Amino acid sequence: MSKRKLPNEKNSDEKKAKTTHWSLGLLETIKDPKNLIQEDSYTYVIADKFPKAKYHYLVISKQEISSISKVTINNLDLLRHMEKVAKKIVQDVQSKEEEKYNFKIGYHAQPSMARLHLHVISDDMNSACLKTKKHWNSFTTNFFIPSENIIESLEKNKTIQLPSDQQCKNLLMKDLICNKCIYVPKHLGDLKKHILEHLKK
Image (cartoon, rainbow, N blue to C red; front, side, top):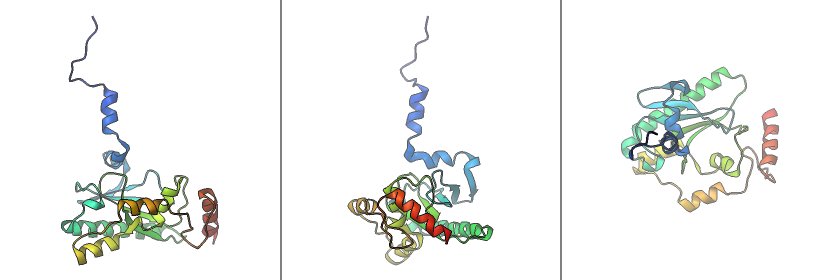
């Protein structure tokens, strides 16, 4: 006689499908200590699994805040701490590298991954994981909001003004332009080749 499953028993594949949605990837990543570069009482630090530049780190809040849009004045100290952690990462990289890298520290206006996280990314934008216009524009337009601007807004206005849905869509679909000069490429492949010329200088 074959053993029948009870009504409340679920297929293991179904369970996995429900718990591994891509938007929850950060939460899955931090469960494995091997992925952690460092952590403290308030944050985890990991290397982005799909880096959009040579150096790309994420400072992730341990507090259960889904995204930057849910941040309030009560989270100001947390954001200050996250920025402090990010700046220390930059210092550590620059102290080890002979070649000088400039970094950007900020938040996406509409992050795709759950849990508040701060990007720490070098501005070379040289990566095999950078594959689409949206990838490029999410770090090189006002879709990427500097951490210091977020903190300043909370300090002065007690709130954060984020771009609207339509503004975010427009920013991500903007025509490509080099982040280091005024070069306008024909397409992303052209831009990636152009960026290599900057890196040789």
